[in-house]
Image (tube, rainbow, N blue to C red; front, side, top):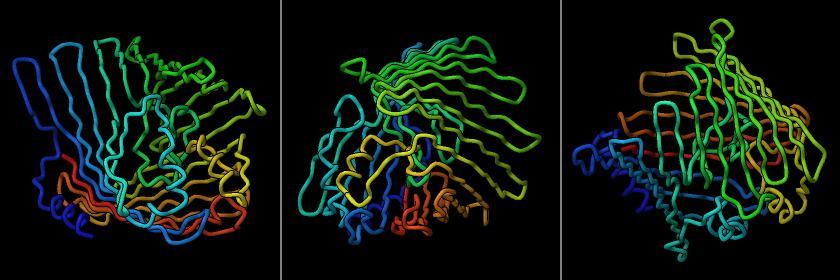
Length: 387
């Protein structure tokens, strides 16, 4: 793999910048550059069609930020990805690669699609921001983070990621406009509306947040297509342990109304051990025919990270610093309804202030008709340089 080897050499020999670089500066105007260079490799079996699937994706993300010295600023993140491996020949990839993105604007173009290689240039973020002491308005492709949960976040009505995502921090974002108003030191209001051709396709939400002692509460009302969603979340402490929860109620247009709820606790010891537990109830599970892969894939296209086939789940997480640079982690997720589970161990090494090496796996066990019992085991390795 000459491309992967070259990328590894570049990352490991790169200077440990780890902070934005000023490209241009004149008086109050500054143009800064940040980003990352990453190689992510995974190996598993195709869950729908069978056969080994290997995927190697290299991503260069360049983030440009313009500071004007006033309330106005701008930011754009451009991704260039290069993918090779047997995943490009899998029926799943061939079925989904030409589907339009989840965003309103199609700001992505393939620059290479031949010889077992696939290259894509896309816009990850592109925003104009007006921010003053009491308010902030953002227009463009953005990410508005709702929710407090670790594994499942039903109150994130935009694009929540699931607990099996290899990059849970990667969010598609929304093409729209948002605003935040800091009413006082303990109270704020937020709203976001995504661009859509019709009201029935629109997504919009407004939330109100306030603090009481060690707790922060958020109340949300919004719509996703024809469904109305109402919810709340909270985060705070019971003694020295963290406590968080989320609840949503969806008034659905094409199905019965349903609730979703998450409750969790976490604790960090002085010796670096961290442990968390989270329970998730999905009152509106998906209806999938796993014996028909094409219908199942079609149904999953509109699914989010909190859409599950079963209703009740338990997530456990533990991390521990083996030394100041090496951290071990183990996540375990149980399908309480059908008796299936996934074990996800991982190990990460902070090679320098800006270079990280990590790897791990996902091991699936339990009933074949459970949430996870029919999934194939997966292994992954990541090399990343942040600059």
